[in-house]
Amino acid sequence: MAQNAFSPSLNSRIGSLCGQKPLIACHTGSWMCTRVFYGWWIVTGCLIATLMGNALGFYGAGVYLHAVAESKGWPTGLVSGAVTLFYMTSALLLIPVGSAISRLGPGPVIGLGAFATAVGVAGIGRAGELWQAYGAFLVMGIGWASLSMTAIATTLAPWFERYQGRAISIASLGASVGGMAGVPALLFGIRRVGFGVTTTVAAVAVIAVLLPLACFVLKRRPQDLGLLPDGETPRRTVGTNGASHWTRAEALRTNALRSVVATFGIGMMVQIGFLTHQVTLILPSLGVSGTSTTVAATAIAALLGRLVLTRFADQINERTMAAAVLALAATALTMLALLPAPMVLVGGSVLFGLAVGNVTTLSPIIIRREFGAVSFGAIFGTASSGIQLTAALGPSLFGLLHDVSGSYRLPLLIGAMLDIVAATTIACSAPRQSGH
Image 1 (tube, rainbow, N blue to C red):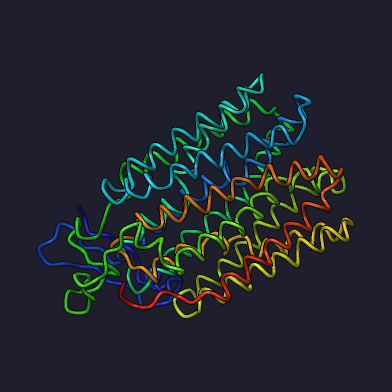
Image 2: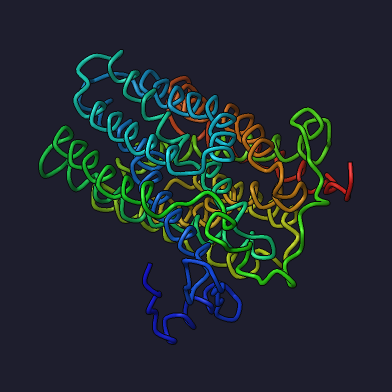
């Protein structure tokens, strides 16, 4: 393989983004000599995977919910059940996804995610019966599990030790970019060429982008390329031979892991419930153009929140940060519930967006830091499964409360109260101490 010819200025910019001096990973006798540690290319590939997965899965689900309910005349609460199935399917697959990446590497899993996402997205655009819509969302759930934060964090775990928080935070920026670009693009396409054509084009795009990444870029671990975590030399690398190995059962008996599952399960349930219904909530007041702008602004705010976390991820107390983020989300939901004027709908959505990215990103950082890299795939897969099973209730919770009360005020207020409960849980729980 030819030597990578990055310019010094580009190398410096990448090093600056990572909060460190430019990394040189050049190993005598190795077939690879590159100016930038290959782990940062893994981060870039993961960023693109999260962009596509979030644009067409996490954020796209709200667009599909509105488009299907409006075009077919089906009740919002009934269609919300399909979105819940999407998240439940994903949740049930997170444990095998984490284990599969640990054993086989990310390539096969990301490839499966690309294919399943494409089939599901194309299917939802062509669904003519309710059962077909449910089936498409189920297949999309397989894709979302394979492109989720569990898949991304497990992919990155072997590549970084000192900079693991920063690596996960940078990769998760793709989620915000996916929201910024995905929802406006989907809404524009549906308005101009129709729902079916738009979802077909999206399906082709996800295959074209993600399959090459899965086959040629994403590698299992640095040792396979003659490298070491963080791009360190052998004498500077902290060994992992003495690292604790945790079984799932041992980890689940700790208050540290249970508090993370409870906190982020509740926080993600509220977050997914709101984001799934955001388009339906604000569209009557803001119109298509205003809705597209507001959803994009929400994603931009999430990007800004993630950028802050990226800078300080390896220096902060993550549990305190999580409590603050959830309290911010509760404030935004209360504003939206009590003052649903157009400007408040925009401002409250943006304020909520500041919390969105970090609610997703903080759980793997906490678990990776408190339990280490050796058992991360299995432990975080288990934690993510519990978090997502709880989170999957969000779309149906918001939808059913909306149908019962006739507005979104009740689900928004209940969501705010649940976020306060989650913030209190993580703030009052102690991190895991070293050792079993």
